[in-house]
Length: 212
Image 1: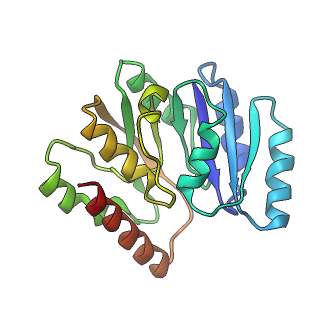
Image 2: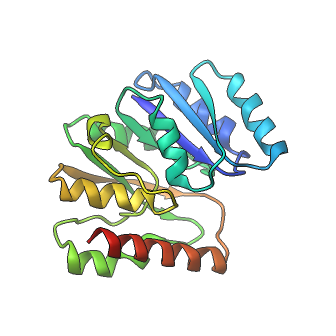
């Protein structure tokens, strides 16, 4: 299994995240996609990636998580574990809970979790999903931590922006893929500003409306 970690300026916890992943036999390559970070941050991310044998550095000049994901998928041949770059407390147990569930034979497995900072992007769209896609029973449909088969990702239209995680889940559901969810516990990540959360809400609801 390969890993894709898109990041725009988040690098503080990358070394630890890559270290956790590198200790797991099931992980073969780690693709860190620098999504138009500031030049000084890009230099740090590139230097960090060079310190780990399994890590591959990619640069995506077009801002937007979807753009970064598409860039990474150009280099991936195996099934994929998607992770965020700002996770402070990612552990081997968290990763393996997700991977083990995926290896039961599902096409897509999303991580359910609570955030120590209390923020939840998924709460913006849960009500609408339950109305228009009642068969998609996920606590964290927009979460960025999940495993997906490469064969499924190849059939999905990856959007440009930061609604990509929700879009993949909705499109996989519409393709009648088998989807599961596993609780990995509490995550510590960076807090989001009210402005950022508001922008995220608008983006997610717009994407969901377009897909349904």
